[in-house]
View 1 (cartoon, one colour):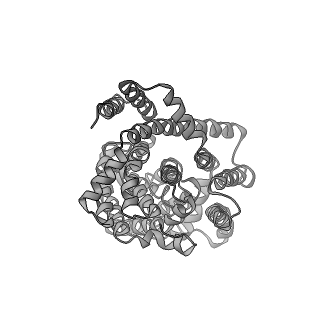
View 2 (cartoon, rainbow, N blue to C red):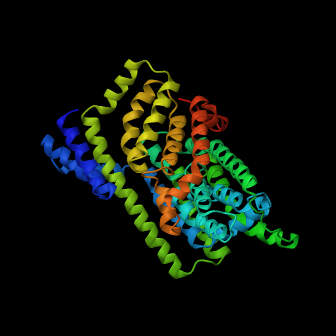
View 3 (cartoon, rainbow, N blue to C red):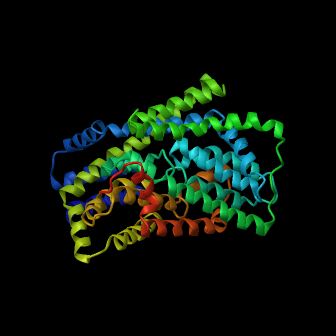
Length: 432
């Protein structure tokens, strides 16, 4: 490891330990690298500006953030909740089953795990905590686990960012997440059923038949968003980036015009919250461009590819090694750092071994979602704790069956790439 990389890593780690915002830590470490290498500090501005303003696909990120915030502010979560209650509420542990199905639907609109947890997840937790049969830990664990569906089922903000760093097709990545996402939901509902049966959890009250048409109509409207997005992308009506604008407009029409649940004050709050969220993501992206410049200048990705080549790994062994690495790093590092710093270092090795970038991307994103639900970092655990006060320890005690299920699915996706690739290939994607 060269002196420049050593200083870069030390500054980055120190900044994180001091709880400095991730984006600032990245930029500070990049500047420290340039100082040690005695290079022009103007390279920081050059790398950041070139990276941000030459990446058309990045426009999708703030638009998907805006769409998710509109959905949360416009009572869409509650309407989807009533819709799902009709479908699965009569199952044992009905409230928890409803939460999983709500997450499936909301995932098709937000693309964000945190938006899922803070929106419909919070609604479900409040409902479950009114029932003595649902423990606090179980309510939190179900919401935390189901929120991981957000970035797997399209659209997906992490997949958009992965497409930026890898050059993979956004549309193919979106399709690649469909089957894994529905498998995740099915397995989660199976876990909930087993636990609910063991604990004799209640079923939801039966909704009178005469109320069904109105509830189904109000709840079914949001279901059209993923259909419109994927249909528009693959019909050529609009690009994946333009699809984000369509999603934002769709959410605005639903919340503001159809449901009439979005006041001007609430809309202004959504704009400000979306601006803050987009600024955080943009700052992290800016820092990552500087770090990637440093790693590329030092030949780190090429060295990584050479090291993998010398180990004579097969595709599956390489992916298993990547899984172990990301699951370990996910205990300590933010998703954005893994996605924007470590993935670019591994891409040359993946290409050298002939690993399909769409398969690699979906596997990597699932790794990162698992990282969101286990300590010590576990961002979703902290989000739910902050919103509800449920102790992280209680959620972890109840959440291990969901964690094991996700790990088994990750292993299956690694060994059997067609779980990810079958649908994209059926729609015309050519494996590279």
